[in-house]
Image 1 (tube, rainbow, N blue to C red):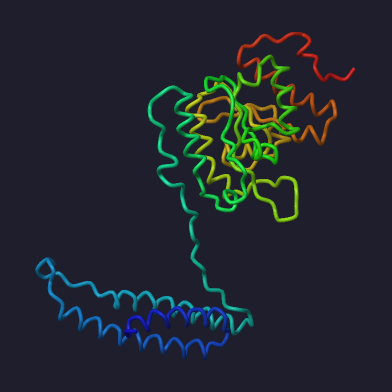
Image 2 (cartoon, rainbow, N blue to C red):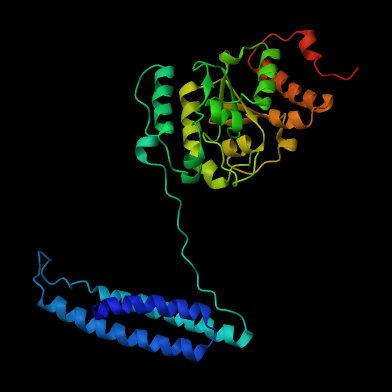
Length: 324
């Protein structure tokens, strides 16, 4: 191992020691060892630079010495850490050395590339093939049965966006087929549509994994939502619906990019890329809270959607879920 490599290794060890050790004297002793090695590394690196050929460098340009730059940066870190050690020793608290934040890996370019020209159905199919091959969320990809891309009419004027696939959706590979999905189908039909006339999708295309031995569904993490949202956005861009209904908190937060309280947000118009956006309760909420009053709130939101789309509304429809 060269002196330069030894310096790099000792820098790492020393900073770790300074983070865990509140003794200023011991930390400074290690600091001095680092400085000595860096000084030797500078000498060795300068000697190599002086004997190396110019390799096309401009006349009069000074060759870059990596050891010198490293030494300057390391000395700065050491001084800062030593000051932290001194303060920590006086206050009898452990030293905290900042740990660099590692950004999440973006989706591969081939997965989010714009689908080529063709009909909406063809472009959605091209996008679906990319989604099926996605393993960006390794835990979800490892435990999923099927990717749940979306279903419905590519030419739909009304689009429903939910949270994530549940157990039944994961098995069948189709959105909204469990108990909540069956209730959503009844809502769609009560509004005068057939299920295959609208488009159904979720923020996540894979069912969120649950700990071994546990059942049920869990709410997606923010990182999972951020990783999968580009797919949903492209679905919306291809379909170009006249209206989007966000079912529940997760769907609404994914679309507007901020935290919301669905109880306060529902019934009020928002916008997603210029498309009217109506938030309402997820049908799973109604499964667990099947009161007439709560169903009426969702239905009032749907009446606003029908009015926006210019659909005829009968007196019978207007009276759904009204208490006698």
